[in-house]
Image 1 (cartoon, rainbow, N blue to C red):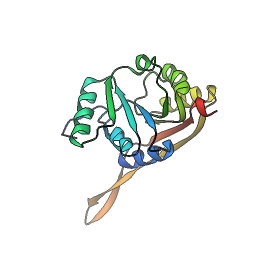
Image 2: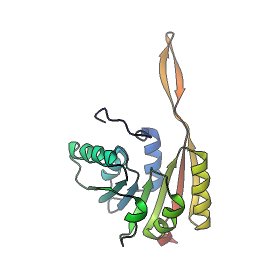
Image 3: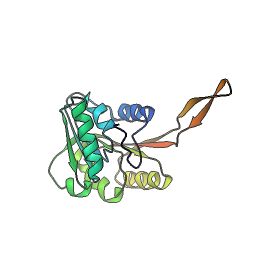
Image 4: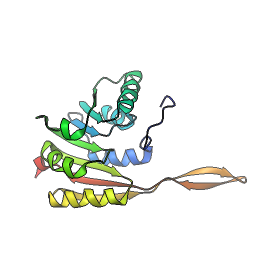
Length: 180
């Protein structure tokens, strides 16, 4: 995305497809994304849903994501440079939420669970994040499943191909409290 690198990088296409499938997005949905990074997932969701609210506490991420959306001609995403804990103090309710950023899960999930009608999906790369998210979601009575995804891509080598693995990602799925 315009040569700009962000910590964590953009979500891999294969991971994004599974995550979006697990969200079960509808064209009438308003979706919250926490940790929008490059904006890649926001843009993908915006193709399906009515509105996307995307947060990142890093100003360089929000600047990049905003520019990417503008260049793609996408107008149904609002980007906010803010911390999720503070942002969630508003009265807004969402149909679904996607968390690409996983800091402050213990504080975010109990609040987010009350604001999401249908589905919450969290992408995690660290086992410690996986454990924290699953524990919190089970305590809230919202945990559904974890899907571990390992992607490898082919590369040329000695007139043949080999596969280079990309770090595994845990896709954690939960139901929002409003659907209970």
